[in-house]
Length: 382
Image 1 (cartoon, rainbow, N blue to C red):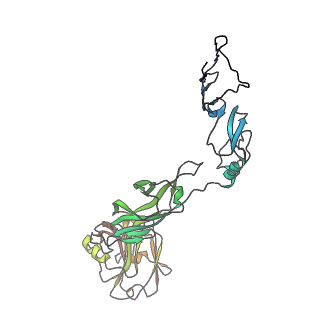
Image 2: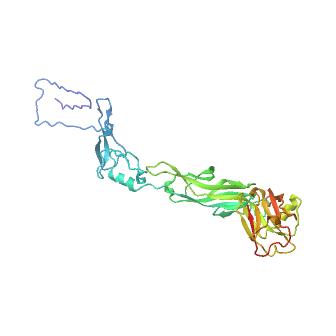
Image 3: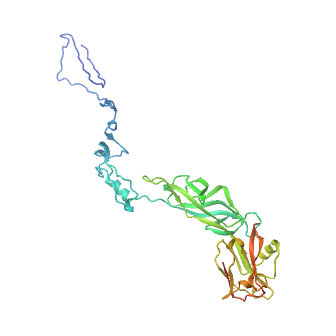
């Protein structure tokens, strides 16, 4: 009889019977050593009907984030077998963090079965710190202080500033710095005024940025605008994304106030008031908001000149002057634009400033020329 070769495929409940004629076997070799072939990854069917092709397919085995050197460990809480980092040791039951100390506030509770001791220690001691973002400067163009309506050359501004109402202001770009931009999401930088986004989607590469459309302002009343930049911190391996925000740069548009001298004895129109206002600036010329502080100025050689009056021009929006004191003497009555022995209401006219904005002003004039000596203090109260 010729050699017989039998191959059995992996299946269940296989039986094999071989029958040959009597006397057909003429040679019997002892011992008989069968040849066994192993078929890798043969599929076994679990009682539930699940196909078991690998260890993780066993219903009570649950793997996650497998790494070298791990072994199977039994989780009594979930009644499953899980992968455990044997080299570092691992907890055998879940840990609920009940300590309310801030030192543990960043940790996730419960700490699940199988978490290695090293992982717990690193989570405790290597707390993820959000990175920070700083707004460094602006690239801007300003209308000249003399007005004219056009913009001057681009300049770099490294802090907030104050401008007279109506002055044009344009931001072309900005510069910022993220302390560790490996922690931030790409293209997550945004530029905002207040809580309103001007433009977003800037790269987090710490390079200076140019706005697609310059941001322009020219407020005609008292105003303030605060600018900032934000980015998204990705939270590392355990924390959620979070917006990080820079400090702000605030720009103000304020009213101009002036105290000074002029030979002009009276004004009767807005045009005359505008002309006078442009000339009385030798004692005080500042920008003021709508909640002014009391102001103190000192007399000059002009204020004691017998040909010159002392004038005070104050925006109506800043409120009434309640008193004017020369040295220690209350002297509002001496600045009422009249020769009357009683305090008169101040005269009011509109002044058109260099930026084309018409602003109502109160005007106070000393009753006489040369009324204030050099160095004598004038205190203006509100």
